[in-house]
Image (cartoon, rainbow, N blue to C red; front, side, top):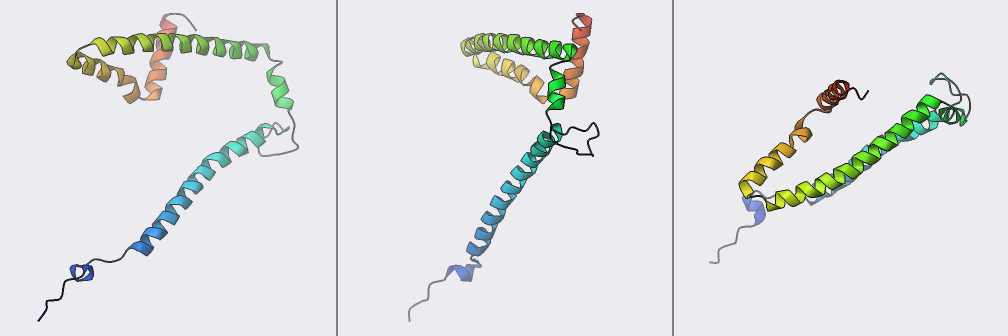
Length: 145
């Protein structure tokens, strides 16, 4: 008498092929839904920025009136120039400092390197509000603003 071999079903295995296909479809749908939700808000803001009315809930017609006003305001133009100046200087400075620190970290021993890497991650762990507030206080102290 030959013994019958046990099948996977005897051990409680259930075929989840259909469930896996449904899961894959739902996963793709969820990704598309999230991306759509993110981009629809940007599209609404872009359309509302072309609204000629001062009241956001009252859409009159499409116009570039407000964009034209931006370039006529001297204070706003000065703020835009300052923004580009500060961001350019910060980019160049961060590139040079980052390169020099990376070269310096490479030359350190592993123990000292780990300490410096932990200190480097403090701003990442710190809340943006706290960082912004502390930078504001520092700039006030240095009388930059």
